[in-house]
Amino acid sequence: MKKFSILFSLLVMVFVISACTTSPPTPKFDEETGKWGYVDSSGNYVISPRFDEAGYFDGNGGYAQVSIDGKWGFITEDGEYVVSPQFDDIRDFNGSGYAKVSNNGKWGILNTSGKIVIEPRFDDISSDFDKYGLICVRVGNKYGIVNKNDQYVLEPQLDRIDSFNEIGLAKVLLDNKWGVINTNGKFIAEPSFDAIEDFDAFGYAAIKLNEKWGFINANGKTIVEPKFDGVMDFNVHNLARVRTAGKWGVIDTSGNTIIAPQFDKIQDFDSYGLAIVLLDSKWGIVDTSGKSIITPQFDEIQAFDSNGLSIVSLNRKWGIVDTSGKTIITPQFDLIKPFESNGLARVSLDDKFGLIDTSGNTIITPQFDSIESFDINGFARVSLNNKWGVVDTSGKIIVSVQYDLVGSFAENGLAVIRINEKYGFINKSNEVVIEPQFDYARDFDPDGLAMVDKDGETYHINANGETVIPEASETSEAPEEEQEIKNG
Image (cartoon, rainbow, N blue to C red; front, side):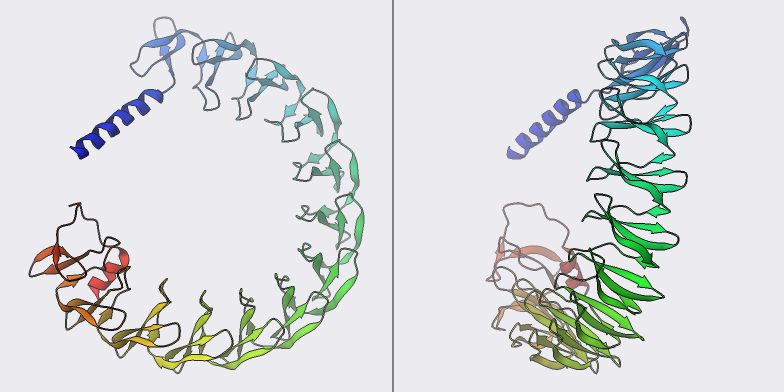
């Protein structure tokens, strides 16, 4: 009865949704009148045939372009005019409620109330106002800016105007030179540069003049004269990487040299205020003051993690250093995986895996063929000679390495095991709670039930191994991990 009620409710919802999402009328040519009208989904005219041409209704308010005697206008889905056919050319309304319209080869802007916002007097115009209420226009080959009051903010005089950015600045081009204007149409940087990069999040932009690079700020002031062969954006530490004669250094926003160009490569400074540097094929670390934390000596240095630790390599062995440059673990392992959230990392030596902590202490001496990631319960499965067991975060073996397979512990503290092709269950004390007897078994679900196969039958059992009939008879496909268990 409950299922029927749910099904009925769903059918009602589908009917209501369908009723509320009626398709707009579609254009149709009427052979008898030779005119276009609009029909509903049943093919009945809901807007009588009277147009020479008719477009589809758009998705921005439900407006359609229609033409009579070579002139274009807009109608609503009720067939009412937004604006009667009076333009030589029009474009669909955009999401902001504006449409480009043209007469005598000149373009303007119309809104959905049928009001001319910008008189058609431009050779071209952008399709929409930006968030500052401005729109780009063209007269001849020159570009300018107009506001929503149809007033010039900047008369057409430029060869190109880029979009205004988040801080209200736009790059402009005049006679092959770049400058910057604000939303008042005022030049904050006269067109005098060969190139200007986009302003970064901190209000600085790289400028190029005579093949050299420098920086300007959001006021248009040159804060670093163009003198470098290459530059990177300023970062959160107010530092920028610069290149001269193939070497990289670091400057601040005043143009002061923090690190003289000397490195083959400098990665960006991280949240610890440290940057990884390369010199003569060796990697080291410097801080934001330019101080050397680790002289270039390693074959590889990975980024510092949330523990303030970096995995480093030397002569194909891996170790760990901290943000002070102190060696936590001398490079000695064949592999070190990233630290997990519990502060443990898997390490490999001579094809055996073990565990270390963030202090470099050995939690498990490398001895296993594999160690998987720790689960949310703080357990990790380990293998040796094709047998599986489980260890905890202290390195203690809580399930001896003796099973063909060990699953994850469920909420009731039981995990699937397989031995001699039979499945059973153990607890966290490595005690067999349900003897291996099943041809297959899934993990226990949140309701405390596990699906098992035995002698060709599939059924559910509880934590005592007793057969239980679940409340819902529907079953779903096994989770990916459980499928892997079954496949062994």
